[in-house]
Amino acid sequence: MNKIIKVTLAAALLLSMGASVANADPVKGQKLYQKKLKSPCGFTGAKMAQKHSQDEWEELNDDGEIAAEIKRICPKTPSSALKDKYIPHYYDFFYEYANDSGNVPSC
Image 1 (cartoon, one colour):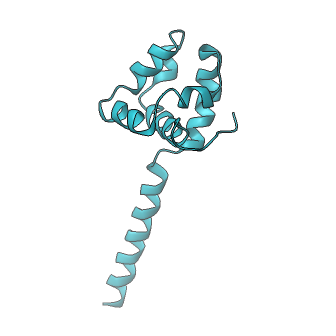
Image 2 (cartoon, one colour; image 1 turned 135 degrees about the vertical axis):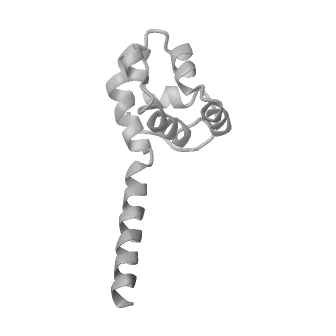
């Protein structure tokens, strides 16, 4: 009985650690913006994030339109900067620093 509890707790711990690693991150989104989008866009991440409110960014994300919106705002953005694996990080960054959030990024 004691062994079953230990195994169950260990499995729960591993699952919780894995779930937190898989989540998107505003800091990673900021780094990706600086590396992949700042030059083609020609402005800082703060200006990009402030193009919309949090609700607008959330709606774009729910509709799967983040990549299209980035391309609309920054037409020179290469397709390689809009890979599916980057989009959740961009979204978290844009949402965190949207025009109604009161937060200002350091980029």
